[in-house]
Image (cartoon, rainbow, N blue to C red; front, top):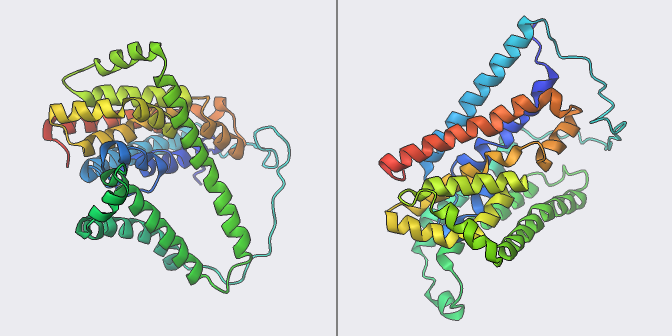
Length: 337
């Protein structure tokens, strides 16, 4: 019998949630994929084929890495391991919230409908509905509104609202406590909202400092002929410093977004390519050991950095950075596609 060591579980979870689904796949409603929209006037489907290529590199290489590690562990006689499943991260027994489960189980098809709706409606709004609408009246009423930079965000919001509404309707009569579910979803949405808002504010303060001009110029002049390289370095470095991909993106783009857009236009680089490289690069050093997401994941799994971090770093740092390099090379050679 083949056993998967528990120490590989955090890496497997991170591979599915911290890499290709978060930064590479076109259409993903992840906050990281939405942050560059107002800066580059793009949408979540920016550079779709390049995104799919990058996502494929992350998934395939990450999966192969975990498979080889699992096989090596089994060859050495290592099984699942001895673990105290009642103690999570050494903080004591976990109190599990118990609820009376409904006898009406949601089928796989119904469960997939809202997920498909988010991507499908987003695409319809982005490529068909909004391009056919006349926003001149709205622009006249709100002259300072950047409509081109807002359409991508409006598409995400509308698609998410519709998908949530459809899910509620499909499950009418089967909810244990619909109000509690909505309240919990609302509360959980507050963290990324306030995190992103505070990080943009923090970035604005940093940009106002005199010393920031030196840092900005050194980053922007890293490779003047190819702003993709400079952008990737800036995004992943700030993501590593903050321990957050969304934090690094927010700070970098709030302080350097206009400069990168100008450089891209001057170099003839499609802003969609800038969008995709920025998001994928931010998903590189964001999972350094001090990252809150890493600490939380290891605590939930009841494991330590010593036990699991090496494999987690391989699938969330090393392989994603390789994917970013590949996308930069392809984008430089063939442009955005």
